[in-house]
Image (cartoon, rainbow, N blue to C red; front, side, top):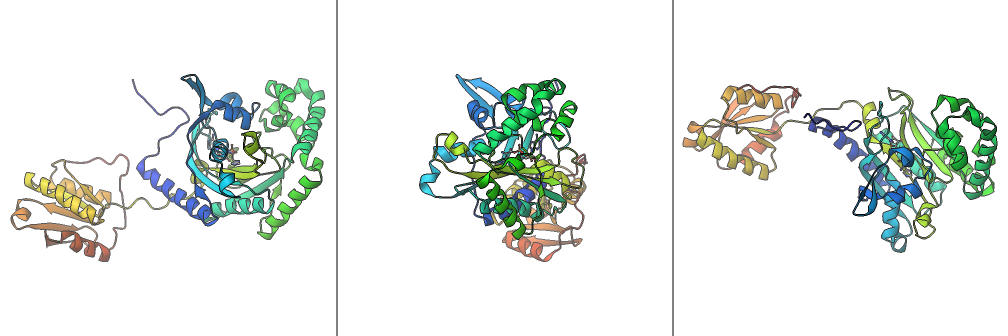
Length: 436
Ligand code: HAM
């Protein structure tokens, strides 16, 4: 039987992992400058957490969660990060330790969606969650930070969409307005939307079904129904975004696919590239009721998460990983043990070394050293052992020298510091075959 990765899930091999590491390092460096500290919460949570917070009527909860039962507990592999992070915030009583908490996370999320370009069943998110500030200054700073992350990665072609879902009263008014709008059109709606008309009419606005499109286009806008405080909050947010030089698209159709949002919601969408319908590079918003809903105090919160596969698909390839500093090529049995020890010493001194223990010919090992983009190839044979030396083939400078075994690490480190890295690196090109 042939095993393959599960549909919609992908392996990340080392030559690709280099790009992921660079991406993650950039994200970390930007958000850490804003005071965010990394939190690593559990990948599996109680199913009920997502049912209650993400919402019963959402696509995620209705059909996309990887849920299972074990030892009598109903569990789910996280489809998103916010609910688990808020659960940890409440569990560890962070509000008693500090008035404001800024956390970020990086990791895989799982949703059994229909795989498409930019849409996977296991995908990675980097997310930021900010607890303890009702905004709107904080909202503007979060959106500005999200844009700064994309810019730091080299992305320029994206638009900032913002809206407000209001809080308690406005949402109730909006729900009624949507019901009143869709009810006479009930028979024309998709089966899903007909069901949601009763349970959660806001979710009809997420529908991608052709049959719902026209009715959605004519639906009332929540922005028109915002009351005093909510309206002021949104106005101030726009003013602060303006101060940051961000001209957002005010997008009343932006409802987001999760139920926990209150007031500010936003998405940063790619305006160029091949993502098509999956153009949301990141999305987020305020969720002022979640901490209390989880049994904590009334602590407001806002956050966002970005889809790393989508972002990577828009970035240039970047340089490949550099090859090792030294390729250790033993030429006889005694040389093999010596190269083993030499490698250990060189690595202790900080050099990156690969040992070829396969007993190949010198020619084959040199070819491999070149293919890897190694700077130096170190030969250890009978000759070398007899005279306590190592033959160093400098592959970048095309020269050969002998160095004493004593203080080899220092000598090699000096040489590496002064020699250029080889220009081309065919390193680890998939399919490259070794020749004996
Ligand atoms: P979300 O909009 O469901 O929000 O996901 C955030 C981002 O994750 C999306 O904009 C997209 O880039 C990426 N994403 C989502 N689903 C997939 C998928 N199937 N394949 C690839 N990428 C995907 C949340 O998850 C919220 N927790 C964000 C948040 C944080 N709100 C407040 N705090």
